[in-house]
Length: 160
Image (cartoon, rainbow, N blue to C red; front, side):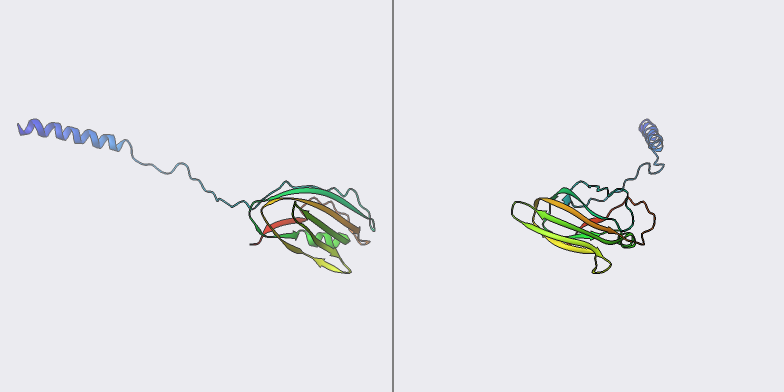
């Protein structure tokens, strides 16, 4: 009687081991990485085309952008590609007029080779939607070198 129970038990264990052996882990097939960043502000990039410029030419260009601030705090407007701007322009001033239903502020970055250059300025924003009028005033340097430029000139950073 013991053999009648022992043989099926051995067969059962063997079948289980064979089934287990058919599910041997070979290795990882898919790995995923990601970072969740908090959303501070939403906006669409604007492009301002100054056209074909000549030495000593001056002028201005304007545009408007809407920024939706999702987290209150200090935001810094940063002049980017300052070295290129300083080489090609004797004056390149960006005036950002920031307006919503309860506030008005103005930020000025850029500058001139005479008065100096301002690389950034900070504003406190409450949550809400703001309209930013962008005005660029420029004078091409008399020493400007041939150059085609397509890049960022103003960045927005959340400070705190």
